[in-house]
Length: 280
Image (cartoon, rainbow, N blue to C red):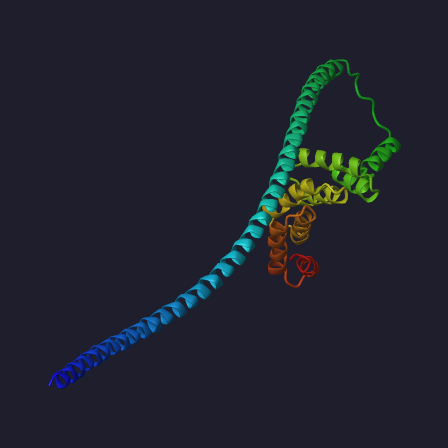
């Protein structure tokens, strides 16, 4: 009896242990399932994060490249601005020098005018005195009348003005004399029909002397004041070349393109195209 009871107790205990073990196994399996689900979720998130990192890396590289490009562009613009500032400073000095020359010339002209007025007054006074002392006219013989008529019909000498003198000096490559002479012509004859040609000669003199800032000022007088001048295409072309010589490719390109568009079938346009091909 006791043995049977003991066996029953053993069977009951084994059953309880087995049931407990089965319950624990089920819990462990459920836990493993949950862990696998969490692992899968984390894997998806990890891959998503990797994709975002790759996109951000690409954008960062792109931004870095753009920043470097902009930095180079800024440096280039700074150099251009510095170049323009230097050109402006040179032009300002040139303008000051021209103003000083103008003031000096004006003072000289005033002195000459005063001397002329004084001389004219003296001449008028002496002429009046001479008229009062003029002896009576003697009759003129026929032979003398013929000589007088011939002298009246004789051609008057050709007047050589400062423009012609400046051209002569320029052809002889006496640039300093040519420049001084053409400046006198421009000052004394502001309404002369050759005034645009005078500014062109002035620009050519400065260009050959490699004083490109001053040449630009002279050529620009034609471009801005005499748009119908026969020298307008050449003056615009030479002004663009001067800017190119000074390292200012922006203004040079603008003026050279202006020649190509405004005078498409001209030799100046062909030359402008050649210079444009050299600008990066």
